Image (tube, rainbow, N blue to C red; front, side, top):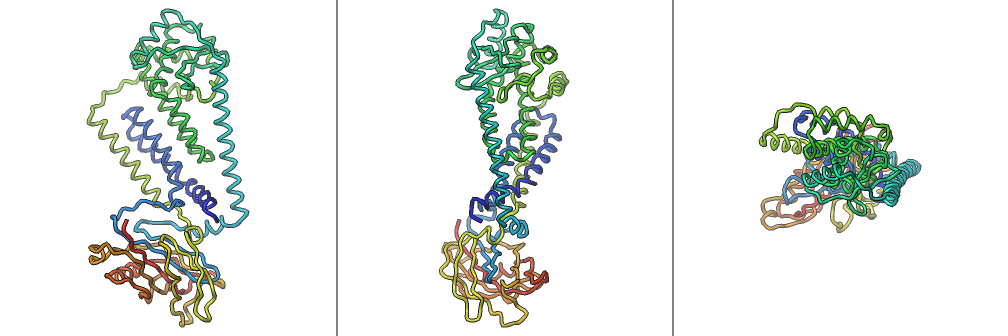
Length: 480
């Protein structure tokens, strides 16, 4: 596969389980921190959405974070044979190498199916977003400025001053059934034409809610979220997370509007009156942030009238820090368990070399190393029980690779180099006969052997049975 196809494959595979895990764990964390307020809930859900769209792509970018210091070594397993497939990068964290999955998705028909699926997802999401923008633009162009009654106008001006906003123009539109706000091309408050018949206190409550959206720049934020999530538009959990973001956003605006008007109880009554009004029963155009948006009116009213003890600042700070620490730790754990491309997927370079006489010519695939000087020679496989990769023999899969450490001497001299090590992986996946074939000195040869001796592999197989095979390993000591 080329890099683009590899990116799609790894992203799709990881997103299948990573996004639901992030969403479920964030919901559990916020359930425990229910008293922390809607602002914390909104920020955590936004953080969860950002992680959900980014984390699945990290393994295919091959840029996972390192936590062991600024000087370290990287490893590549070079496997010879007619069916060379296994390569892995080193790390002291757990890595899942889904050889069967990648091998399955490497088939042309499966790759094409995945690409068609992902392309269709991007197309549907893009068309949906453009349609929303077109509807919004059409509503804005068709709207005309309306003259409010003096009482409503003065009440709206007081609400704007309380929220720290300049006077906002109000426009009426026959295409709307709900109040809405847009920031394109400027901040505008849009109301249905029938809205002029709504009682004064209800009209002020609805428009104050929209002013809260303007104060928070929710239109631009919502547009950015919609654009970002196009990469994972196909995933239902992404839409569920976006729904949680919208719900918490509406609660925040309710609290701001209630504070800017006549208080929580009166504002809650206005919400009920608006919900009962026949002119406000239909759904507003997409991308319009309406007062009844979210279909969570009952929960919002309950939140408004609920008697809650005031939270102290230490408690707010403590709960906020705890929630973010848990979310960050969760993202690190999810990233460490990402399915990484194996062998042919992770290889960054392919080199051909002449094998010793009598050896089947194959490819050496190297990952996470600098440009090698030459292909390493084959291990001595005079032992009949030691197989070579190819001809029905599938190579071993690295499942544990401790990261090699710099020697004290090399550390002080800031010395870098590549050590070539040969070994035999036995039927149990244990390294045997580990020795250096091309060293660099400065104590790095011994450190490379020490690290390779602790490797663990999923054994090589022939006809489904474990067999011993010979491998070459390049340990790249470099300063980061």
